[in-house]
Length: 492
Image 1 (cartoon, rainbow, N blue to C red):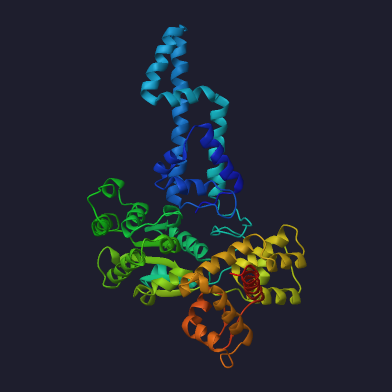
Image 2: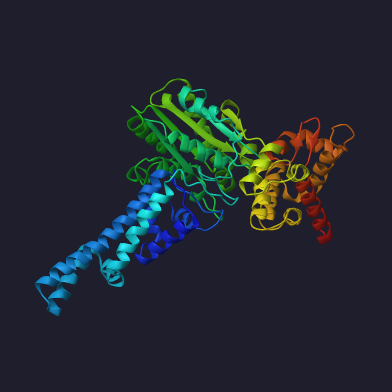
């Protein structure tokens, strides 16, 4: 697994600009969308990581471009040794333009030998550094953490992953976590562990880059993108006479060729939230989940080549709510990522260079109830220079990414209850449930809300404790109060 630092991403973007390599050209070479390339080049927590195969294709595209410029310079220099006539050199450039393209020949004029050598050296350095497993790095919260993040905290016994990958303990597994609870990070680690196994075909597909907000997509779009990322040749997928069912049939034919003879096949599908968020209808999104159910059945029945397949995906928020309309959600093995306990919170803080007093750790537990993303935000604030009290203030004032997290959770809750206009009353009920701490003595509105959505609220991470004695952390209680105050003040 490769990990790219901020410097690496900046250098790659600079190289592309120097060599006139557009994002759509890189996207074609890497077999992703231009939007995915753009997200890969981002600086910060929202940057996208490519899997190993795509990274190798990226390096190959950059190296190929570099070799073209070097070849043009070599050919020019060799020809210049034979003649110094301007007309002859101009005619030779016309030949080069016919062979390499006018733009590439013109771009070569802008690059010196030193420029080419510098790009080549930088590319080699990036590849060497990004692939180093010993290069542990402290990673800012936001987006999946790479496998070599020094501040990653294990929340599932690694032995469980090993048993699933090697002994066939589960044909399909669903990772379940609170909203922003680390499912993508966990799936990244599954990918890394599987990639170390001899004779194992492994692929992780990130659905999010293929379906940006602002548009809606149907099941044909979902399957075409998924199968392309898995490896089905684009020559097959570009056949516009194929419908969604035909695409699934073509995938089976491809799998029978590519997976037969493999010791193990591990397929990881991340980003189903984006599928449900932007699906034209719930039926389109469920078609993908039901296809996973069919794969799971083929594995269980021992049908070749699916008998060697291990499938991983993740459910959070609206995906968890909606996906339970499919049997897949109940029949796949659930891997639940629990919130952090006090000892793990101390590990997070220590990874950020902070050793806290016991009462400070208790205060963080009360503030977030161990929500991993929120704890990491708090730790990062202290890492960047905030004192304990200031870091706490940032959380309670919903500064920066705290507000972003809360906005996302509100959208997930609105999807859950089906009416954004009812959020105010619903949050009042949730506040009561968390503060009372027992189901007895609740108002009718709060009792009704818990009967209908109690389990979901625990899965989302809004409520903690047991179902009979629910609790709510200080951060969410404070955020709800701010929401209620705002809607009352604005007359919403």
